Amino acid sequence: MTELHITTTAGMSMALDEATVQGFKTSLRGPLLCPGDVGYDDARKVWNGMIDRHPTLIARCAGVADVIAAVTFARTHQVLMSVRGGGHNVPGNAVCQGGLMIDLAGMRSVRVDPVRRTARAEGGATWGDVDHEAQAFGFATTGGSVSDTGIAGLTLGGGLGWLAGKYGLTCDNLLSADVVTAEGQLLTASATENAELFWGLRGGGGNFGVVTSFEYQLHPVGPVLAGMVLYPFTKAKEVLTFYRDFVTTIPDEVNTLGALLTSPDGVPVVAIAVCYTGSLEVGEKVLHPLRSFGPPLADQVSPMAYCQLQSLLDAATARGARYYNKSNFMQRISDEAIDTLVERFPTIPSPLSFVFFQQLGNAANRVSATATAFSHRDALCEWGCLSRWLDPAADGVNIQWTRELSEAMRPFTTGSDYVTQIGLETDEGAERIKAAYGANYERLVALKNRYDPTNLFRHTQNIKPTA
Image (cartoon, rainbow, N blue to C red):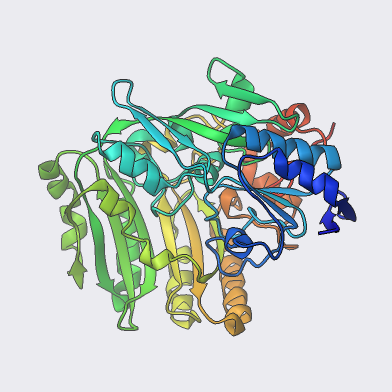
């Protein structure tokens, strides 16, 4: 190797001589990968098969010291930098083109304290990792709805999930976080230490540093009454209307997801997925209206382990397929919104795609809009379309269909995105990001000015500093 060309924060190409690269490499305990190295192509791939970016350097961090060294290198040389945790989000912001990717995939340890009912997990862990360890002691915390999801992106973006009705969002259950800042300092953020930074981490995304570990509050979670109820598409309007009314009357122990999807037989259907956390006997009574409405085509609701529920949607979101999505928050599900979805869904290009309503949850709704950086506490649900297909030749038709549906649905929404779903595309600009952070945006800008005034952490749903 003589020299490598790397992209700077200014978007320019800069040459790195061999001595500079070698010095960086020897400062790391984990490997530093360059294009052509064994393992490079595997390391740059993330969950979404559409993401095909090539970092010039990938630092596969083995611990906090490696993260500090990588951030220091990027700051010193003004190198474009991205951070990979679980690598699961649709836009693929974890991978930068031509810069340095700080890869936490090897940092996945989870330690449960069953006495304090807490779990501390490293930044590369997935919810499958956390759930596996916590459930060994009969505990869990709100953590998405797919086991392969990374804990970092979900927590920093807010964190919807099956347990949010009873226990709030993921960010509501965060007790503390260890953060490597742009200055290369390791700080602990909590309610009593660096409290303003702690506020910003709970919904403000990856704008303020690299979170190397998260500490969560755990809750007793035994077997849940959960699963999916399927209805014929010919009754789609009636079912979604029932769903709209049902979710406004349920107790905290219930959280839901309503969807239009295509069955394995190629037939459009309506699905309502549900989780009841608590007494199974009481849960049977609470979910009876859902299971008897219709009647359904199939009722797959049954007692199951929480880990089983968390992997229920894994097959529908398998790693390596091509994904594109749009979403917005909704305060209510109107008749017009239902009509729009029912009318357009039969033309969906891929049978692997689906549209959905994911409920925030009662407890999540009761938190103040300014208590955490996640501000959309008055939303009933997130509406979204997750388009999934396998053939690269079908990119255009699937992306176009998803965008057109999103525009048709926008009048029925708050106009604010779930921030984790916003990507780096040219059509997703500053105003959309500002709306996603909602009423807390200016406070987040002030926090950005304090902790990252040069915008080192820009390869994310970026809050631009004004300092």
